[in-house]
Image 1 (cartoon, rainbow, N blue to C red):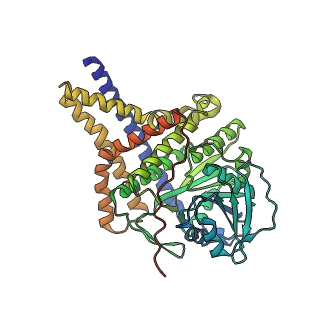
Image 2 (cartoon, one colour):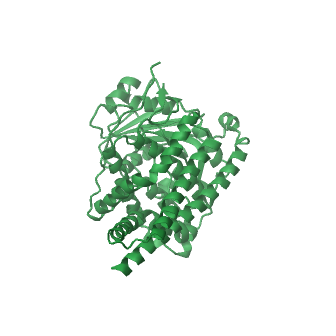
Image 3 (cartoon, one colour):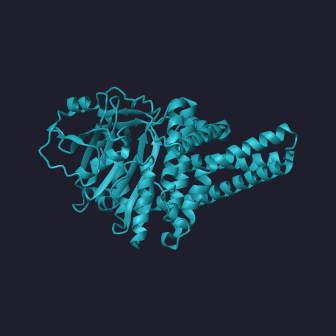
Length: 469
């Protein structure tokens, strides 16, 4: 028993050390890439993109399921985006509430006289509607397909633009977000196949007429912790992976793709649990199989604001679903591991995802149990415990602090010093006990996947906080 506990605790220590070294490398890489991006900001030429007759049209594809509390405000926000040629396709994915009624009342919807061709299979489309007061809006009403991917596929069939931007219907895009993201894409349009923007936490902020009015931190601790998670995931993780053209995921809340490439991979896999991760990996696989020279990028300043879970039950469901989606994508693509054809994706990105993302909750759970057992039996050395705290807790906390400081130095979305101080304070409690809670939820996701439970459990919605005019 003594030998087993020593080996287990030593393994956990080495695992945490390697994990945090990887994150330190990602942090340094992110700082370098972010510095390069800041230097390019002055030359982006957003006004030239806006005024140019050669700027390509974009179709916003926004699936909605039971979004009656925020759907009108969300569509108003999408239509208010500053972009010269924009089409908005809202897919009502079998909503059981008044989502479609709210849209009909707000935009006087009527059946459109257009031909809908289901190039990509999806659940049955019941009708396609346009608006006499807003010609850029198209609403696709369909039977529930059981997944967001199925709804997006229906929107892709109806899209007419060379680029599609997939967003969540409950999200708010900043007015210049498409101009900024397209500035990055148009810098090398022949090679850039997809670009992701940053997703930030909307909770606590206010919206007026579909536009973000005031950015504030949420009041509840569980929402503030998610702000830190999002900053770390986007400003460090995705920024750094994209620096080496190994970006494994573009958030389903805000990502833009060349439509022809998405159609070639047959859209989103309808049965996918993590449809955003799955789509990006299938695009990587397709382009690498074809021997293409391509780029899948991340740009940190085009911003999407989204509502995150405000209660533990909804958060637990979301994190279990995310981890279930992780395995649901990694397993079908396991044959990409360490194969020369798939380059850095197969040699670096996917092994990292397996070891430090998928197996993380399993290794942490076993390790914590052995540490607890060793402590109870009086076998836990003080030196090991101190080293574990240093490399496990303190190092990981430093990474979160780095993400917050990177946000504050370059973007200053939270301009009140008290809110920045609050974020830094919450960095100290993120890795205990919040990390252990997410570990349990991720283990639940693995268990659900292994027993074939692919149900989409809904998140409790508060709705977009609207400030009266």
